[in-house]
Length: 378
Ligand SMILES: *Cc1c(COP(=O)(O)O)cnc(C)c1O
Image (cartoon, rainbow, N blue to C red; front, side):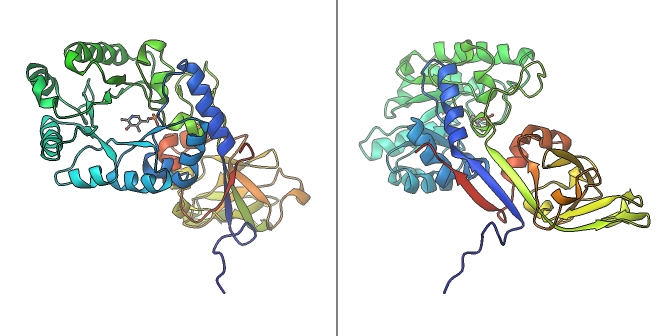
């Protein structure tokens, strides 16, 4: 007989992912962009949350076009959602044309040579197949340079064999609304679009989550959010704005052991925290192997039944310690669940305490949690 490897009783930690919150966030973004297409970015296994559950939930909420980074991610999504449009941000790698075509994936063409390769492939197969064109408006990461874009403007026939559904670009500083670079990239994108009149049938798409919240000028014909769908704050640096998104994940770790300190002592590796007599310490079964970053040692705090409990000492591979002196004795026992990310400590706050961003925290969450998906809405 096979035994399931994961159950809430046996697991040291539980990751709850609220699919209804994901779809509520999707609808909020739809309202924000007044019904323009909202095309989710579900790269890196939907930012670690599980593309097999996240993508179908978004599909039911109305998403018909998805973006991923890698071709393998596109193939995986194709098995999950046979009927949707899947766009591959990392572009067209040499030799990948036939796999793109076989799985009906839409490459985002990031260079002139990628445009030429796709055009040749389409011509050879006597079929105008879809590919997006990415214009770099100031990130120096992916996309056509100014020179390449000018060459394309001068040679419209390069695209004759291709169907171009989207012209995209990407914002470097959208999470800091006051940064002048946002306006510069907006202007550069307008300029590029105006110089590609032969692609006027393509939809223009610039904004990620933060871009959506800059202003309607950034919305163009469609938007490409990721992090905001999973509850990440689209304007994280702006403390005047409360996070408008619903929180999606809750991460709970189990108390494996508690102890009352009678003689002052160090806690954890390196003895970096000193417990005093009378303190109570609980050991929780989550560590850096679970993506609970080591930089949170002696930094963050967790919640046990609404009470804030500071992380004390270093984070171990599988364990961390919290000071539960302030918690009523009957609330903290072996098996009690402590919120590592939860209603009182959202993902952005934990990421900030860890010296990183919600993106890195989410995509780094490990595979050892027992996962629960809430979807009461469907
Ligand atoms: C990841 C990514 C997005 C989504 O960004 P969020 O900030 O998560 O909303 C959009 N566009 C591109 C090109 C990306 O790489």
